[in-house]
Length: 592
Ligand code: ADP
Image (cartoon, helix red, strand yellow):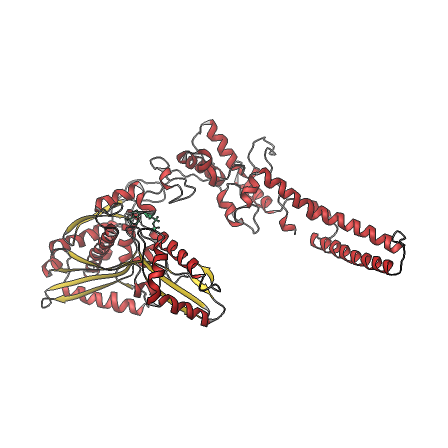
């Protein structure tokens, strides 16, 4: 029960210098730091420390005493009634038992009762502790700038030289102090101040003071913090700059696209650009969307494998599909259930729902639809225990054969024929060398490595760069980069047919990060910004084909570089500048 007791509030204004910061937030030397670190690990003294026995033993003694004397006295009471002995006549033993009962009752009331009442009073007062109490213990460190008492030994980074931060307006300085004192939780700044930029600035300042580390170099100005509120990022303190390069024109299905790529990998844009050029001169690429369906697969449990199997038969029975679709599609005017597949593992069923989601990537939409169906199913399967809305058979952001085989998001195949002379002149290699390398590297090599959907040279490079530029979820790069690159000599070995088949490109042009200004500008450049006016889903599908087209260009160029033995040379040129990264020199010389 000791754990349930609230720790005392951290002392404020208790420092010798009269500052309102808790001592651990004062600018300090590294010697101080060690002392404070060890001090913060020692628990504060408690009243219970004065007890002769450990608290749990004292509690056990008083519990036992209370119940045993209560039992004894009830026994005596029954005997007195049975033998007509007056109740007020008590023996010495009975008197001792009554005193012990009262004493143990007072102890237990003091220990549990007062604590119980206190908790009500402090909850009603709504102080900062109460707010923190509603939050998971693990999150507490994240959401306020006051670190909780660690339960394990924590080694903090050594504090470098004292940082000099910008002077804040007086009222902001007050708020920073409140955050540092734990009076205002850091996460609540936006709602309390009603100004997201100011909230970010104050949080950033508090963070710098807590850590003693400067955030100089991480920009704060020039970003619309309102646009990410409740949608893209919590507790912002700035934003990361990633350069955006342009590869293209990518000639795909008769359209020219300038493909934005956000990356810090030298050579990547240049290489993709070279692939686009080779494709362009050869007449461009053609793409086909094979499938378009986002998936979600909850895991549900029954008392028996038989019942789990009954659910599978019910869900996969074509006669039930229309009813399920009506229930599912209520989640959004864009969600349309396509199919339901159920896999059994013992008493557990994994139900993979697939649906079209218009121009949205669709995770929210499909999850809402699944929730609707699960609620509906409780009528026929009241014994169904929903363990989780996602049971990993979906499968989101994890390498999984199910996506590789069944597809997730948009399944796209993209192809091009590159003339032999272009292979020689632009790509500086030969058709035969490319075909052989593809066989031994992308097919046999990946098979030897036991790869899951990684039968390509670097699809994830292009996928990640386009995803970041266009506001997609970069974590979905895991499955979106699954790709098999095929190369075949055609026209009597003169030309090459190259294709990429990507079963799980998960993209959207509405929702998530796509509505942010920079990402939205990149979508606009591609002509796929927002919801399609022609037909819902058209923009997202087109974006998926652009991703595949850019991957095709990237594959063509990198494979050519490897076949020609150029890879290391070009990386040394574009990716390995000899800039002194120790912070001293500022000149950049390009190694050759
Ligand atoms: P996701 O399902 O990808 O997480 P969101 O739920 O964040 O996407 O965004 C989709 C929202 O955009 C939905 O509220 C949907 O009604 C709306 N929306 C507007 N136009 C479209 C469209 N053409 N396709 C899909 N969703 C659209």
